[in-house]
Image (cartoon, rainbow, N blue to C red; front, side, top):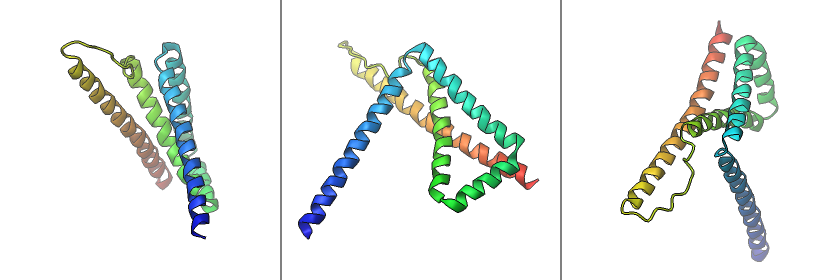
Length: 156
């Protein structure tokens, strides 16, 4: 029995690791695609368009959005969590894409051998971390702002 459980756990961990690797490959591919300027502008246009549609839906039809949200919440809480994660992710990717417009060489690996190469590498690493943190904050602020606006419009 113990071997059967161990075998099942090993199979689950193997599947989880493969999923994590596939997700990492997708993320790396998308981040690398943002170094190409026309692709970056396309990303920004698509993400901004989706954000505009979300904001328009909340501003124009707040009661319908709240009703739909409640109906989905009654059916399954996981769908609500998925929707909130999608809105957060849209804000995160839009913020990150805008930063990549400002810093196009952000994810570029530097291969310097000079005297200040370690300092330069650390500075670039700190900039990456700051931009990712600000991107996460942008996604969170977008989600919170949408929720606050929705709440204010529905309460009136």
